[in-house]
Image (cartoon, rainbow, N blue to C red; front, side, top):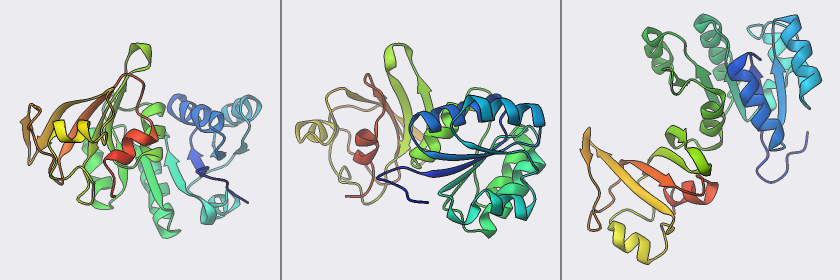
Length: 228
């Protein structure tokens, strides 16, 4: 398998409503996608609908994951309705050292189980959707995501300590064009407290920043908050 540019090799477990959206977005963007779906009918529909390999089997089996190319995967995403299955698949993914592990979680009480294993997980009704899962795989710094009418997007992103924004005020960041004109800093959460940003508000490492972009949150915007 040869990957080009920023293309990823993704394994998606589950082709239901959430998984279907992940598959749709990933294949549309040209990523190499392998789907593992236990339900025969769903597997057949997915195979006929998308340009991807679909394996009709149980993803909790080592040999099935190996057939899916788990050792080469850039990311493993589980989207089944069963949290125990999702957790087991994530544990297997950890064993194979998959760089990015992300799972949907149906029951809020189960989120701590994923956290204890240091597995990225997404729960709660407004976040539990395929688009958010896909955006999270693409942009690891994102904590939350919402699409607005007209193509605008709002995300929460953590400001890393090596970011070039550290120590700058919002005005300085705009004047130096480190933050684009169409990007608005809506809010900053710092050590659990909400800060309403002003022009003289300085960025600090670890800030969780709510960002609005009327053109959508592209990689160029996310790179702003990443290391220099």
